[in-house]
Amino acid sequence: MSNLVLAAAVGYKFKQIEFFIKSLRRFYKERIIFLISEQDVGLKEKLIEFDCESIITNINKKEIQFKRYSIFLEYLKNREFKNILLCDSRDIYFQSNPFEFNYNGMINFFLEDKKIKDCPYNSNWMLKTYGKDSYKDISNNIILCSGTVLGNKEKIIEYLNLITKYVSIYKYKKKIKYLITFRPDPEGRGCDQAHANYLVHNSKINNFELYSNSRGPVATVFYLKKIIFDKNSFLINEDGKPYVIVHQYDKKWEKFKKSVENFKSYLNI
Image (tube, rainbow, N blue to C red):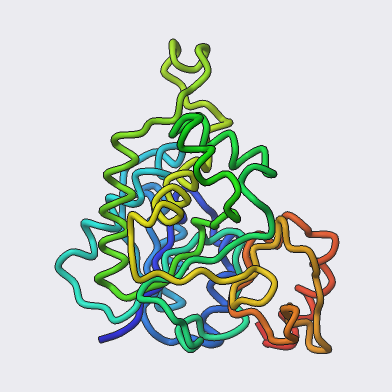
């Protein structure tokens, strides 16, 4: 059985995920599948060049944030894979094979560097999705990033089932002006992270492992306290080890711009 990297790229141009694909293919030769729109014809053709597969949907890119979970779930049900990485695509690059790290959990989640209560975005998502009581229960926990989740197929299926269930039960409470006009509330974009944090911090799923942002294998850059590069422009953690995955590097682009270009040259991509 092969491993699988599974990501959404609905409405993206190839240039937006080029670094993701080229850095990943530098270290990893197994399956990569992108969820894309039926309008993304040019993107589909470019993906084939890099031996990537596509799941085609007609769902609007503004709705894919939540609906991707049920699409992924349906796709995986009757297929065999060993381990699966669910991840974002536009703001990620790879520094090694994501499946070669020695993970401890059957499913693995990666933390940021701030408590939920200290982040206005995550606080808002939790409060408007689960309410004050649920927010208070986990507000002192460190933010878990929903943009990178890795586990075996069985646990990923369980996680996708839970996310799909809770997305259908707990709706983000939109502002009135968006509610009465049937428009998405822009402040709710990304609130699927509230579901991931609720599920994990309340142990609705078991056999998981949490990894520190400062010393783990995944750097979620937005709140990363120390940004350090080695001589080859690999981003390294506080133990001096290169991160496997770098996520949200665009949020600190001024600090990453030069190193990203050097890293691309080092990898010859």
